[in-house]
Amino acid sequence: MTRTLLIALAMCSLPVSSAFAQQAAQTPAPSTTAPATTGSPYVAGIQTALGLIAARDYDGALAQLRQAASFSSEEPLAYYLMAELHRLRGSVAESLEMFRTASRLADSTTDFQMQGRARLGIAQCLEQMDGHTEDARAAWSEYVRFAESHPTEATAEWGRTRLQSIDVAREQEDVYVGVRQRIAARALELTRAAAAARNAPARAGARR
Image (cartoon, rainbow, N blue to C red; front, top):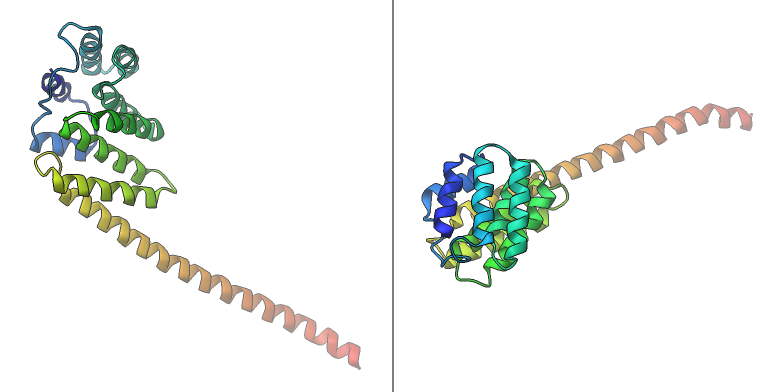
């Protein structure tokens, strides 16, 4: 059932992240057992949400996914889909929370592809958030470790590329910080020198 739902998601043409789209195209959909019996409120809720996604009713889809999650709180799929929808709407912090929940739940199953995709989402969200560079680097490192042990479910090279980009950006920032500090120090020296020059005549006059 999970495989069917993810295929349906792709058919809805949901404009999720490019990395997710690439991964979906290059790797098979999860093949775990059904999250619940066919026709259950959980499955029905997700199927309804997918229909709403196809109709671009993202608010309605989120409401359906929240309801589905309340019926089966231990299944990761509803949380994963909510994470992608939140990210689509620009709510990165909420997306991160849902990816983390999906990851935690998926880790208690044998759904390795969901585990990989949730880790990917976590790393991408953290990289988009200001002040989370180190967290993003740690998340990408975790994704690479996972991908190396599950090469058919995730792509380690993507993670290595992002780690390299983060390191380059961090090195550049260190250089910029040093330059700014030198500029600030030089400006302070010039300010002090100018102040000293202004005060020099006054001191000379006082001595006379």
